[in-house]
Length: 279
Image (cartoon, rainbow, N blue to C red; front, side, top):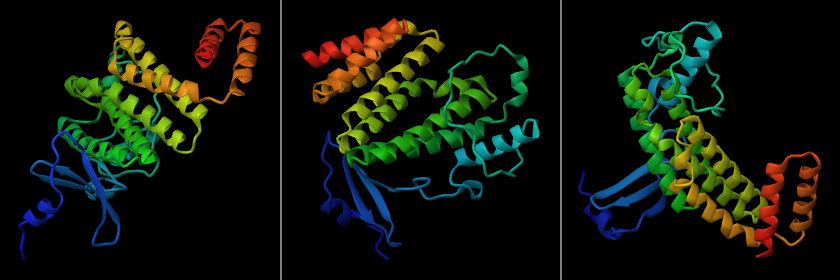
């Protein structure tokens, strides 16, 4: 059996400075996504874990540990790190806050992810990162939103349940980027169907989520300087002129209703949107 892949590399040359991605059909007739690198290429499955592995008979390490967590919450006791029994339900992926403080010493009792388990989760999250970047190039925005939402759940798990403080904060710096990519994917997916209003709403939610993150971590001064926020704002600015003219009346009605209800902050936002539409 010839194990040399030179022919495969020759037929798909590497282009410096360009992310080259393609879809192929695997031997099992299931699709695969390939990414060309300078020394070869990556090949990933489109669903489930990118490398196709099933740790602990689960779709991924994340699903395995989420099942452990669900079991622990149902029993009202901290899980045994060595216990491989898992339930089927998963906790909510959305977290309303980003508090990294340790006000309650008893929280230590509930943490169950040791350093090896955190390493497995980090390595797995890297696989999903490679895939959602490739899928972004292929404009499969729905799958990008799926994978970024999934990696945000990993960050939540680290933050709340990693035993070592180093593991709890090690990946928090990636959160703004993943949040931005998720909002961008949701907006781009809406744009594919010419839903400009839905796209703007997705961007606004992403910006607001980033604002809450920086506030909750005591970094309010970094919000306006964050590249992720700039990216979403630029995308939004490009969409405002594409709103239909009839949208102007709706915005004006919402602004007037906000003034009547004394929600002046919302009224100011809607006023600014009207001004931007005028431009």
